[in-house]
Image (tube, rainbow, N blue to C red; front, side, top):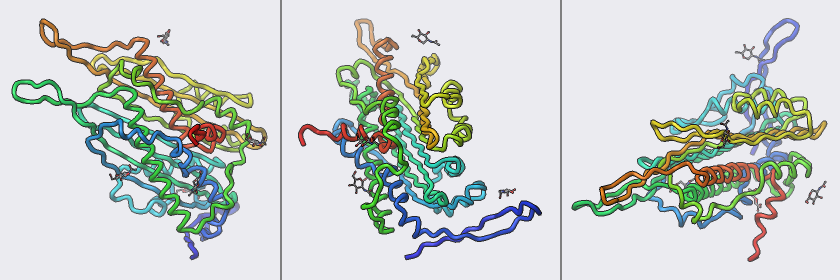
Length: 412
Ligand SMILES: *[C@@H]1O[C@H](CO)[C@@H](O)[C@H](O)[C@H]1NC(C)=O
Ligand SMILES: *[C@@H]1O[C@H](CO)[C@@H](O)[C@H](O)[C@H]1NC(C)=O
Ligand SMILES: *[C@@H]1O[C@H](CO)[C@@H](O)[C@H](O)[C@H]1NC(C)=O
Ligand SMILES: *[C@@H]1O[C@H](CO)[C@@H](O)[C@H](O)[C@H]1NC(C)=O
Ligand SMILES: *[C@@H]1O[C@H](CO)[C@@H](O)[C@H](O)[C@H]1NC(C)=O
């Protein structure tokens, strides 16, 4: 089977300012046969090593009432010349009809294509968790990656899963003739179990899709390169220091101390690999995503490696009783003259404490929770764990040494 697609390209006659229209073909079969194609997809969209060490018992601890989801997955190829005028790319040619998926961020994906043009390789992922005791919970996960094959073809792939869930109501004390029920509040450990459940489902979904893709194009896994970007061990070591190992879930006894009625975080993680000379341009292209301090670290790094990691003190909105934070990290490592690896993560998480009711001799009173040291520590260890989870799950090829430790099970 020969897959070919015709697309139009414009070339500018530099002398006479005449635009001529030409046609070019992408030889899809050639791209599928390239080792780089298989290696890229395997490195970026094979979640087997995460699944091997994920906590598959998490589902048992979460009292789901119900869950519903929608998904999207796509692998595609663009010719380099299409990226020169990325606003002209017909997104429906690349993504297909999205009639039933109005939530697909088509313009953002187009911007990702533009970023890809500056890179050897790029990866972007998001873990968006929201829980509101009175309503629903949401966990949306997405990943987009791209890389050049043979300097001419940009291979990209993307996966989205969106889930809405409800937890079982809590039955309160019998009041008059009725049993009163209430939405369920969360402890930090619940958040960790819920994200684990949906991350596992995302991973299973993507693994199935990628296997279909390999089968469809008869791609052999035999010649797959484990380290397609040819990163050096030194880079893996620096990344391991900056981002740490996957963390265990918080112990139930520690987690129980504080309960939340609303809790949300949207963690964005981005990895870019470029030539050192293109790094400033690549950083400029994403400069609206970061605040000034981490941006400055990336932009003015004159050493082989510079890092940043900070969570801003929370602000409290007394009217909504919401505590809001901002957490960011950034990493740049340059292996002159071969490549620069740029990474960062960011989130603006928030929560409201649950107000507990206590019966006293004089009636029922509200017990408010305080943002004491214990609560602060609990909140920051939840975020640390979730940030680490997000980068390890979606960028496992950057932590090859961790993979070894994580799969080392003393029972085997
Ligand atoms: C890109 O498209 C715009 C708008 O149609 C056009 O003005 C511009 O000349 C194009 N640039 C290239 C490099 O083709
Ligand atoms: C979507 O829902 C179906 C049916 O409940 C389930 O089998 C599947 O695992 C879910 N997929 C994801 C990605 O959550
Ligand atoms: C994914 O990786 C596992 C081992 O880590 C391998 O057994 C499997 O064949 C891979 N699947 C694909 C489609 O690359
Ligand atoms: C990189 O590390 C791996 C695992 O420790 C080792 O097998 C390999 O030889 C190292 N490569 C180089 C170039 O040092
Ligand atoms: C942040 O909080 C810490 C401890 O609660 C305090 O020492 C520090 O001054 C605060 N920083 C800012 C910028 O408010």
